[in-house]
Image 1 (cartoon, one colour):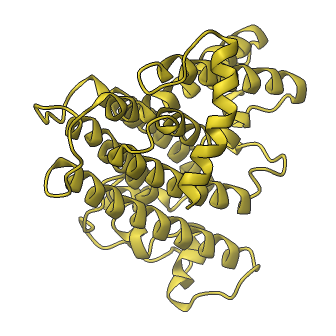
Image 2 (image 1 turned 180 degrees about the vertical axis):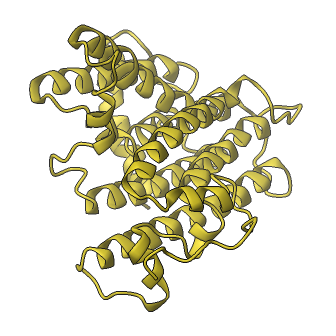
Length: 310
């Protein structure tokens, strides 16, 4: 019901837009509209960053733009079962991530703390260099990446292959679901820990050592330092498999996986940068790094030493 309503509403928006720019709104021509949307989102983020001197507008749109792209491909091909499934999954992902971002204050004007740290970089401290970085990476590259991770929906829109849960479609749904559940649980554990650490919720007895350390090492965070990061990457790899299911050859590694690969590369850099900040803030984080996998959930190599003040 939600998907049908969303598609119907988006169709009403896209039809006059397509006519205005001379593009027939159909699955085979939706690419031009997706590009238009992407350029619009990027331009909006850039202008807002100049107006408010804040660089988190892309973050605010992160969970929303893939929904717009997938719905655009679905808008005039509502009978495409694979696209409907992909749209439903993207909608669930986006709504959940938007909620998680909102409860952390993401829409209340708070900027991601990492941007302020990054602006202190020796090279990026130059105002002209920073604005080049803002235009190229923050505003346009990140929005292009969000379009690319949604691009497998474009492959599904072109396909006449039947949706089959017994094949690649089923594998994609299964892996996506596992990754989504892990991401939800990890985000919830981190949220509960941060709130209780700051005295905004009841403290959890089994986390008493982590309160002393300053960071969470229990639950999913005993298997990975960033289980939610791993899950987010895996989720979009699974999403790209729908492109494989849309082809006759069923090959998993095709150009349609480009978005997922670029997302993985982005996470490698952002995770390393995040950890460099965390390690400076929490002296015992180095010990956690030495015994716990960075991304891939895996049993610890050895026991985590107790906090030093214990």
